[in-house]
Image 1 (cartoon, rainbow, N blue to C red):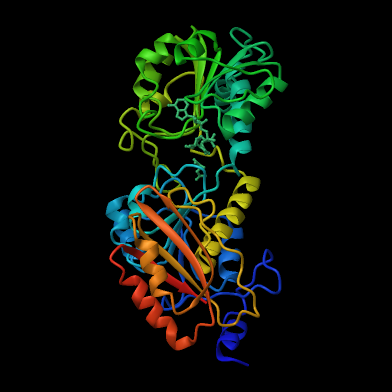
Image 2 (cartoon, rainbow, N blue to C red):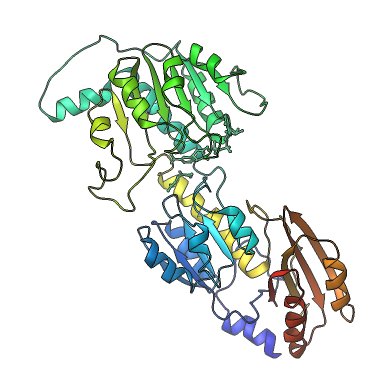
Length: 444
Ligand SMILES: NC(=O)C1=CN([C@@H]2O[C@H](COP(=O)(O)OP(=O)(O)OC[C@H]3O[C@@H](n4cnc5c(N)ncnc54)[C@H](O)[C@@H]3O)[C@@H](O)[C@H]2O)C=CC1
Ligand SMILES: O=C(O)CCC(=O)C(=O)O
């Protein structure tokens, strides 16, 4: 058996995936040794299984790591998987000398410095909608719970207090829901709310086709004037930071309800507390906070956020520990989806679905194409680079090539046939010496 074929079949026997046909060649990296993966924040077991089966070394932790430990560990790994708590700032990423790819096992990617990662040639993947339904269902539960003051009755019963009241307890049928951010979660919520007899209005910065009989409004002001319940489903951006403060809350209908399961920086909590204390708001539900603890335990206090005690003392306030997407179904789906994107990028170079990177892919190399190699080249997006690379490859047969750009960076994949083992290093050295090179890899 030829040496390369032997390595692929004997040394990498686990690197097989159900999504690949038998004729597809299992590729292995040139010159990067064993691939090490660090998974944090209790990422679902499905991801651990998929990545281990690919032959990678997987280290999984249940919690987020303190920044100094994170920096220590990130220096050694090719891939890191996180959820919403781990902050991958430029300070942290600067230390990541071997890092190829980041997997956000969630929807939000605001915890990662996406531009800095791209400039370093590090692709970032997320799971754009696998937990959307879970968030929407939680919000529906909260709308009913707030409307019936179930949270307060539950606390009282746990204290042995029987307090049977109907004052200010309502059905949700016939009430109006105002959704801010009509994306994956907002639209799911819209459908569920309408099926329970609510009228839905939404505000979004882009024009969106309404689902069912929901209607888009032109301003937040209009939404606040109409809505009995306001639920926020925007990403964390410069524009959404502190989006809801005293001024916005004062425009909401008297005795309305505010729900935030988006990001903790979107609602100014002191303004929310004031709205609840003054009686303007009849209740609120909060799943996300400006600062969230790194691990489970008794960490939610004034040291973490200075207003915690005031918030905890508010009436008809449901507080949950960022569990909008925390269901078995969502976590399983996210585990499969993100882990699959990660191994396809690491082993085959496909960047389809990356959030900060040009999306490039090539059809698979077949087992019969024994001497084919795949060049993966991330470079600065300036004129003349492709000419240079194609000159370097002019003595070889480029079977297929795909290139695309995203802002300042570009990514090229090229499959080259009939390359002898001793030529691989030379190709690698030549390409990675191009002035505009950010990151060159070869898999074969
Ligand atoms: N609590 C939890 O566990 C979870 C929280 N989330 C958060 O929810 C956010 C939304 O998730 P998806 O619906 O999947 O996102 P999405 O990207 O599908 O939809 C977001 C919508 O917000 C709109 N938008 C952006 N900026 C806006 C602004 N300034 N004003 C009004 N609308 C604006 C966008 O145009 C888009 O239609 C995520 O970015 C994440 O931060 C997501 C999943 C779970
Ligand atoms: O489940 C998580 O850790 C984070 C969920 C979330 O906020 C997201 O998907 O953006």
